[in-house]
Image (cartoon, rainbow, N blue to C red; front, side):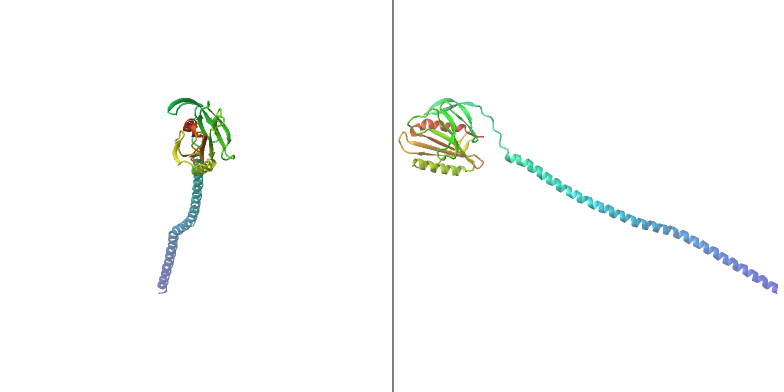
Length: 275
């Protein structure tokens, strides 16, 4: 009986040990499998964490750099615009201050004038004035002198007068002058008033005239001191210079010389040109 009991006990112990061994093996295997399964996940998690930490940082830095670059780019066009504006001003200024080019004129010219209904051909010489004009004149009959005006000694003029003045007769002359800062309207009004006062006579009605090779519009008036052959005459013509100033032509002769010297002076003005 004891022998059988011992055998049974021994068998149970072996079975228990085997069971414990199997459980230990299974536990170890389970742990190994769990470790293997968890290891990739942890590795992946670490990888993802590194990617998440590094990538945003790098992206933020790049974005900051990218944001900074356009600011520089926005500043550069402003400098370019200022340069363009400067270039435009440089281009525009010479256009506003450059005077038009004038064709050179020959020193002599042959013209035909009409005196008392008869044509007369004369040779004229060119006079280039310091006052900013040029005009042809009959050098055989007239001379040009730089002098003061007959109504204001402070005003410089060019005076065209006979080479040989006549004795005991009113002066014969034509003065050409320039007012840099006086309009044609004002100059015409003041010169007319001065002539009326000088001759104590009323001026004629103003008449429109065309002066020079450029057909410049102007006004003309005459003041006559009387009705005698030697009554003094003053003829005034004023034109606009196109720049806010004016040229004036202040001629003097006597009544009988109106068809002679008066006509010659008038025809001389046909060759007048502003330079």
